[in-house]
Length: 216
Ligand SMILES: [Zn+2]
Image (cartoon, rainbow, N blue to C red):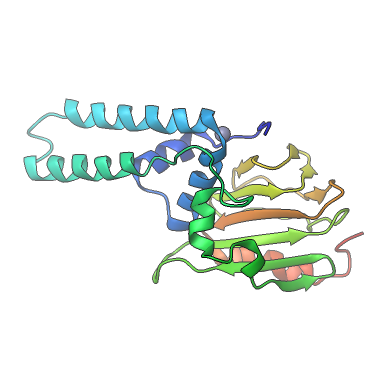
């Protein structure tokens, strides 16, 4: 698998520090399961985080706080995604949230001709959203912006927009000020895993999908 689009440094550091929301953690782990470069970067970020804590002035951080933080870093280290070994076609971190039936068990909801989505359940109280998006060949999403920190991982097929071409394993880690209009350019449907933080802006995409210009 040739991966050309990777996670931003800021996202890798946030993952290593344990500050990402649940949906984003799943997308990062799923990409890292397929990408040796990002696995290496996550481990490096964890080491830097650990060293910074060790260097802290003792008066600035109480022993209890430091011990707790180091302990939580240990937890993160254990959470470093392992390499590949996909379950079926899926990276393990995604397979584990989809449950036993995997992709065939996903309940798709058609949003517009050739465009469907499925919500993936996370922990109760999760403040981020994880969804699968399935788009038929040749279809495009309306031009849209991104609520803070949207991550999109391509699982199958490919799409293009003005930022490049995204195939299986590629991740779009777009700044929130980027507007784009992705169009599926593969012969097969494109399936993406999407983590979002801001449901209102994401909902607006779905509202706009109902407009007649979709799929031209
Ligand atoms: Zn990567």
